Length: 456
Image (cartoon, rainbow, N blue to C red):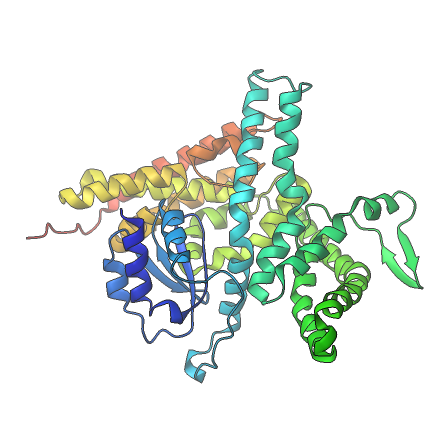
């Protein structure tokens, strides 16, 4: 694939650079925020070489590329400033206004998607350490383990700073100012005060001592409020001293608000979120993995899986493991691969067989979009088999208490993320994947599907 040519053609078919207000990407998709859909020709977007499919959900126009998405994104960024200062969009007609759900999903996607490479990279390093330790190939008391461990932990420890940067770009405030506020939460001198008291008073203001490392919700709230303070300061400060006074006043206003109100409030919300997940896990451990295993394809199609990101990231950073997405997503992805491979065996269409094989293998490794949009959604019945098989695999994962110890993929390529102190965790994860594969393949083989005819 020619990434440069694909980028140029995609940009042309979504209405040109002037129609794009924000652009980011995830593992397989370009995610556009567009001023208007009037200039978008979806059929021509799908026809661009390298494009697998298109999804217009959650307030974003998503162009599915696959594994080469980063290269296409880099070429697009050369064609315009789509990831910098947020552009104010013109008021849309009433019928085009986004729903509240779309706005929330768009916000979560824009804030958390840029963090996924950091979390995935760190998670894979932690998984590698777990595997090396399990087989006795590395000394836990040695310097190599020590360095790799803190290198991986850094992405979680400094999560408030990374999150501040992506949230600031989404909310339209100064990224550097937002990152500074994140750094204030993590300053060693602030952390040192926690050893002396739970609350410290400054000028009569109570500052609750909270550990903000690896936290998500506090800096999210802080960055949400920051644009309003910046606009207020910009309005009241005279132009002649604006360069000096604007950042000073912004810091002096936001720091106490952050430390006294928004930070502690975010910590309470974050702790509550984790406690709810722990309660669900204790009372009904099979529920979340079963639901995710069965319905993850539909969540991905609609963009609703981004609503799970705050809970997923918060659980992973605070507990060291998560049961929100991983244990259900693994069998779901394996089921997607099984369905596509079953189609590959049964189809009479040679070209479609090649697509099904590549999509099936990719799904088994953890990237499902080629199988989902290229095969399973197109034929429909494979999606039914995937729902049943993924749900059964997720049910087993939930009943056996499978946990994922790092962020990243949910496929065989990332099975190391399930390696922990209890060796049965990864074994049960593999069994759940096997259940999903066998069940999905057998169901689809039995119910069949309407084949794609050969092109004349």
